[in-house]
Length: 316
Image 1 (cartoon, rainbow, N blue to C red):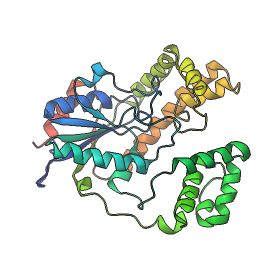
Image 2 (image 1 turned 90 degrees about the vertical axis):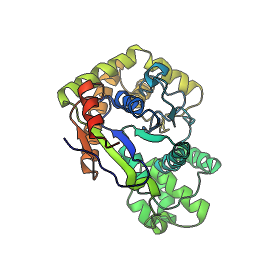
Image 3 (image 1 turned 120 degrees about the horizontal axis):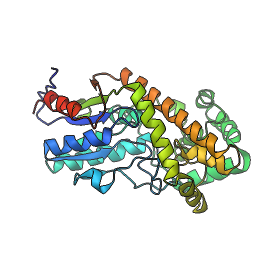
Image 4 (image 1 turned 90 degrees about the horizontal axis):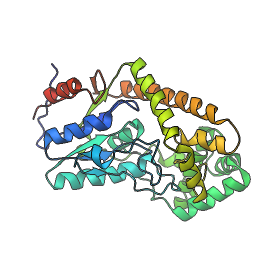
């Protein structure tokens, strides 16, 4: 049996990752209870948004089992929150939790978030929401391709790396230029040093049976639609949330928006959502297999045997 060993004076920071629907919440909470003095930091790029509920698998109060959770349900769905934004907020939470003598546990399947935390990008300026809204309005009037042309004029290297319709990345590159007067392509290579705690993050990845995982994904997608996903999206749109935000671009929500715009049938939206999430789960597994130092747990997170296996790996 593999044991996790650390000679560092500070305790490890644990990270539970894996594909969607693999039981990360269950094993993350169980780990926190096993440790006795742990708090969970969400590492999922959809659970951060307020009002985005049904298709996000946000843990309920019952599922949290009294364990403190952070960075869930705290960002407006109209804000295109970035990986760097999350990394900055997560780093602050890690320091706060450790200052109280507790152990942070990062739980979620957004590998890009975790990688950005461990290996930060350049020290980018804080998002200027007014500037972001101005850029978004240009996109609404003239399209994403027009923004790409704007970027090509001020930062040709960045523009050439992006698809003309890649609104999110194009918008961010324009924001950096207009806020700093510097081209993203010039400052992007200048990464800042990893935070002190980066070397203490120990990653455990769930690897359930693909057949069982895909079956669970399909069943969960159908359940989300039965629970009122379409109605939730209608209310979000009526409240002013735009279809092109990161929040409504999430799996399930994107296809419902297409249905509400008359671009596909409801049945098509359900089936395409299933396919989208299965494809996403596959990409997640590919991502985590490329990460260094990942320790694999061969099953679902709600399996008591898998949880016991993890406990035995911990050198506490």
